[in-house]
Length: 265
Image (cartoon, rainbow, N blue to C red; front, side, top):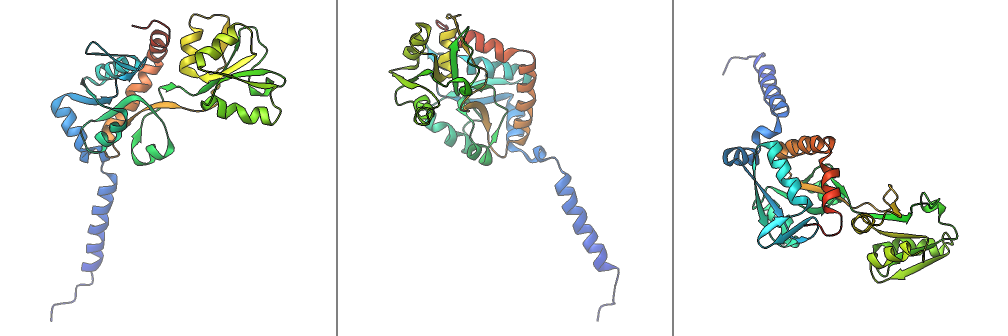
C-alpha cells in the first residue's frame, strides 16, 4: 500500500491553478496565426469590391477611391505592404473567414451581429441618412419639420424613414423623387424645405452647392468599419490604433473632402 502523502493533493491543485492562470494571462495575440503570417510576409491582404465609387473603383486596372487610399495609409502606418484582393461584395465575408484575406475594407457597414462574430474596428465613415436644408434655414433637426415639405427618394431608405413622420402629422408632406440627386436639386430650387438622403449623396451634391448644408446628426446609422477575423486579435489591435492616429491627424477628413465630391478622379 503506497504511503499516505497529505501534501500531494494541495500541491497538484496549486500546479493546476497556476497553469490555468498562466493561460488566462497569456496575451491572446501570441497564439494569433495571422500575426505570424503577416509579420513573416510583411503584407496585409485587403479584400474589396472595386465597384462602388467613390470608395473603391477599378479605373483601367488601377484601384482608386477613399477606401483604397485609407488602406494604403494604414499599410504605411503599420509598415506593411497592402495587397488588394478584388472580388464580389457577397464573397468578402466568406473570403475572410476562410483565410483568403486578412481584412475587409470595402465600405462595409457595421452591424451588431457582424461584430459579434468577427472583429470590427472603430467606424471611419458615416454613410447613413441625413437631413439637408438650405443654408439659412432655421431647421436644426427632425423636431423642426412641423409644417414642412420633405423630399425623399421614392422607395428608398429615406422614404421608409420619413413616411411615419407624414402619417403622424410631424411634417406637412413627403415629396417623392426618383433619386437622391433629384431631391437635392429640388431643395436647391426651393421646391421643398428639406430632404433626407444618404450622406454620400449629400456630400457629393453640397460640395458645389454652397447654399445647402448637411445637418451633423445622422438620422439612421450606416457606419463603415474594417473587419478582421475573430482570431486576429493582434491585427485588430494594430488597426484600431493606426486608424485612431490617422483620424487625429485629419486624414479621414482629407479623404472625405477629396473623394466625396463631383468629378473625383
